[in-house]
Image 1 (cartoon, rainbow, N blue to C red):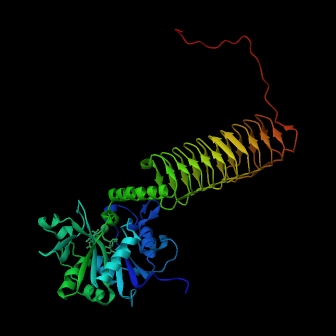
Image 2 (cartoon, rainbow, N blue to C red):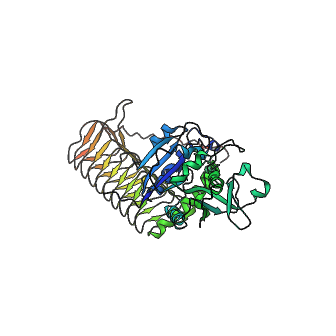
Length: 466
Ligand code: UD1
Ligand code: CA
């Protein structure tokens, strides 16, 4: 067998059926992104790395939308909860999907900071203690919103009380439920069938399996999380941004440990899906988004935005440049204030200067486009020099047309190349030309220039009082 289970006797159940009303959104909560990846994908990524027997994901609100947005096909089964009658009710829907395993690990889809090591530890403790139910808890400074862990005089957990059902005294309890449980499969569904819904929200609460298990004299344990921030749940947009900040700090630290210099890290956004090579320097205010890859020994910024960009080794991207879905080869230098749009492919040692926009074009090795130009739908050879203000006029209002430029071409400043048009290798085009026909190799090509006049008796207007 190629795929090896690390936890062959474990099934994971991910709860993601709720709408997340507090987000005030048209899309389900778990599809909101934290640093470029949906919350559900963060959680699935984490639980997948435990390599369990299977993963059941409960969806309900906009379930088609959730299913359509989950990344690659995984070892998972979708379970539908038609009406969101509570977390206990949600787990109960998995009775068919979760079969003959020893334990079920239940996690929520709205806790993207969760780490797999924490879950592995929970499962190990649950098994060491031979517990029936183990609740992962955390000690926090502000327990507001979480279920509180209620213990008796000798410290044994007697139940979990939701904020809305808690007495004033219970609300002061600082130990809370993470919403994460490890439960023996052979008792889980019996307990769930016994759940009632007489509580403040009229819901079937998963936490109520704790008193039910205790009633049956089952071993119920708690495991305390070392880092309570990992269980932070996202219920509204304020929590979304706090969680994003925490994750950003982790990601930044990770890249620093892997040999990336990050200046003013608190101003930089590096999404979870980005990769960066050794000895690269990321300067203040950079946004590295989506599938962006940056190679070794690059310098980016300050204030550069890279979206789904592929940047090879030793590339410099100067301040305020914007790169979207473009490829930049080794040794190229971009910006400041350059814009590379989708389909821009720059070969080695290409130089793109300030206020230059390049779209859907290949620029071969060593060519320079240093100032104020638009290059669209173009194939450009190697070692060209494109003068300031050169425009490829590629669009007639309905169709895009190509400009083909050979090797070692020199285009004088302020030239318009009206596509479709071709400029052969080693051609030189005079400044200010309007090129509408093929330019042959060698020599000088230029379009007719308007006459220059001199008016000797003209006086420059003067301002009064000066
Ligand atoms: C829940 C727990 C609380 C815990 C907290 C940790 C309950 C009753 N409360 O509260 O003890 O401290 O998580 O973050 O379990 N869901 C469904 N179907 C439903 C209801 C919810 O799939 O019918 C899913 C939601 O999509 C969400 C998760 O379960 O992913 C938790 O639901 P949520 O409403 O966020 O519960 P909390 O109030 O945060
Ligand atoms: Ca929650």
